[in-house]
Amino acid sequence: MNDFNFFSIYQKKKGIDLNPGSPYFISGIIVLVCVVLTSGLFVYNLILTKQIESAQLRIMEIKTTEEYTQASYYQNSLHAMTSYETGADLALQKFQSSDVIRTDLLSNLWKGLPVNVRMTSFTIDQTTINMSFQIPNRRAAAELLKGLKETGLFQEIHLGTIASGTDTPTMSTTIDGTWKVGETK
Amino acid sequence: MKSQNFITNERDKNLLIILLGIILAFLLFYFVTSPAIDQTAMLGAQAKEAKANLESTKSLVAQLPELQKQENEKKQQLLEKYAPFFYDLNEEGLLYKLDTLMAESGLTVGSYDSTIPAASSIPMISSDWQPLTYQLKDLATITNPELANPGQTGDQAPAEDTSGADAVATVDITINYGPATYPTIVNFVSKLEGLNKTVIVKNLAAGTGDGGGLSGSVTLSLYSLPKLDQSEAKYLEFFPAFGKGKADPFQ
Image 1: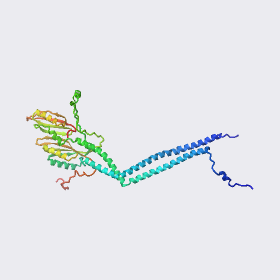
Image 2: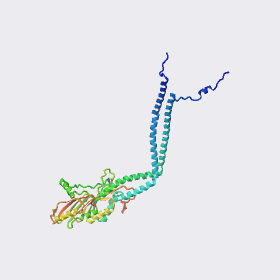
Image 3: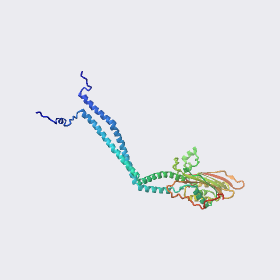
């Protein structure tokens, strides 16, 4: 009677015979490592994508709220007012520096006039003044010019022609002056 | 005849198998892993940016009460600072306002002419005056500094801005008057100053006329600034004293 081992084929296949030195094993390990690394990267990328979508969704939700709309309005308004202030400040500065012809200028100006001269006309603008006078004599013209210079309002002042009157004993003359910028207030 | 194999021995066979594995790994890395690494870096930056945006959005909402308070305070500060500027330059309002001042000051006006409002920067004041300089004077000034030409004193003129950021609406008005007295002229200028508004007398002329009294002209420049609220919108408003509606316009 012969013995038959019905499990012989299973006994042959039992266990895996690994040889670490086998080239198939080494190559398999190398490829396996690359596959594992790549798979891990794909999973990580998926996680990052989900995080980004979640953050963007949350941002969208916040931006639809009334509080965000108001906060955004106030923030934009503050930025706009900062730029507005820069331009408006400059405009205000320029206005203040060009506001030359005022009543105090006129009153300070006439303080330099001798009492024996009489003005016949004047034209004032923001940089110059032109005046015409009737004067009794040339000495009065000299005193007139000196008096106006002593007001300290002029960068330059000049006496024009002194002409004798044809029908009257009085003389006439003109004075042209240039204001000192910033000193006329 | 026995065929010859390319692989002659076991060692070569092992090396080729390992090499094949390395090549497979390299191809996998080059075509799959490396792009995935690049995408990881890009997604990492995007995630960081998205997180920062989320934080800033949340922070903005959290600052709402403070922003509201700052905005109101800033607005009030600027309204007070720029109160001298007119709210607007509507022609009928200005005419009514100035006519009132002319009547109150007793100025007899012959003509009144107003330009159309235009946007422009307020011009810088500059004169053509040049100091008298020559070599001997420059040399003597070293020993006697009193000879030096007096420079411009007082406030420095603001720097010229060529960007137009300070452009404001402006209108020029020319008033020819006469016969008038000098006190009425000064009175009118004084009332203009009393408005505490951005009105500049650009030119003032007066002269004695044949008929007695003084006649001349005054040219004004008025400036307005767009205000941050409506509080001054009615500054130039006036209420008509006469009814409206005529069947015969020539009557």
